[in-house]
Picture (cartoon, rainbow, N blue to C red):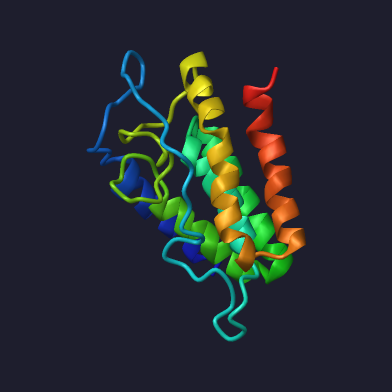
Length: 179
């Protein structure tokens, strides 16, 4: 699996990062608005082992989606993808975690047209960008939508998973919007 990783990353860079056809090339001077937070769990990947019908890593995907929803700089995406891998590895195994990380590396680039792309929460497809005060104000306005969506998923999550997501919100979103 590890030997395929560099090849798949190379292909993803060519296909997705070289072909950003949707949306502006910069958000500078572009009016964008953040939509309420929504998640589909692990997108086109199972939320857990098919054999157990449990949602062992669903919480990892929801926390990851919160980062993807607001978008931002490339470094923030890289960190979000690494955190997804680490979270999944804790509840399953290294191979599964690496497979998911490869998936988000390939399919999660901004401006791909995919509903799970980096910065999917904005009303237009956005590139990697540095957040400005206006973006942070939009995140603050939509803060409660994170908990509304989390409440929808509550029946599929255990208390430890909900705690993990809440901690991720406190680490990633709260510092942005609370002085």
